[in-house]
Image (tube, rainbow, N blue to C red; front, side, top):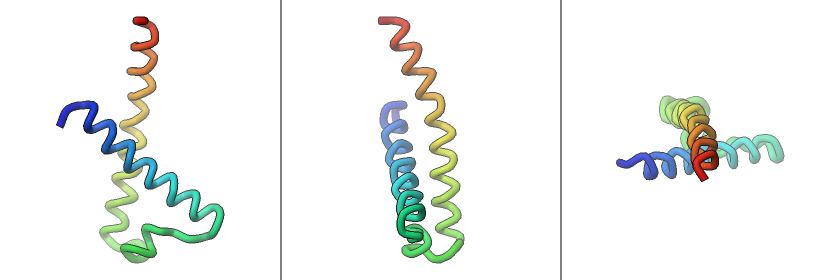
Length: 71
C-alpha cells in the first residue's frame, strides 16, 4: 500500500472516530460499543486503531507544510 492509500485509509478511520465522538457528545450514544459490545476486545482494537491513526495523521501537517513551501 502506498503512502497515499495509507493516508486515505487512516483518514477514514479518524473520520469514523470523529463521528462516534459526535454521537457520544450530542446523543450519549456510542456507536462502536453498540455494534461490538461495551469494551469488548474488538471495540478496544477499533479505539486503538483510531487513536494510532490520529497520531499518524499528525505527520500530514508536516507534509502539507513542506508542499506549500515548495510552491
